[in-house]
Length: 138
Image 1: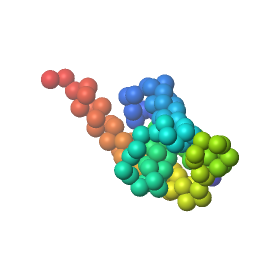
Image 2 (image 1 turned 90 degrees about the horizontal axis):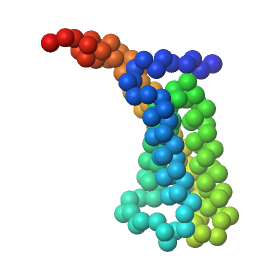
Image 3 (image 1 turned 180 degrees about the horizontal axis):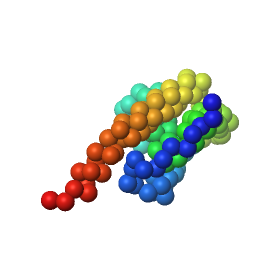
């Protein structure tokens, strides 16, 4: 099934700002996954939850920025998770590649895609009502 480019009419936030948010999140995730372990802040969160949350956020923001590429973004995020695990396994930075991390990344991607698509559908239904409220004169 070919991807249909959805209309951008459901968000007042310009595509450029949405894309910048996605790229900023990507930079943070790449730093957090590829920096030496001793340079990272210590979080008291389960490691797999951190992975799933990071890739949920990346996928959600990517689909929000470029909804016409939603399936490609999801595939690219899974590939990014795999590349990060390979890099962690091969770089001498005190990091370890782990297939369980890739599974957590993939779960985050799936959930991020599902939530982004559902949020987009809800906005498609509500946007005409919101626009009427915003343009109604007092």
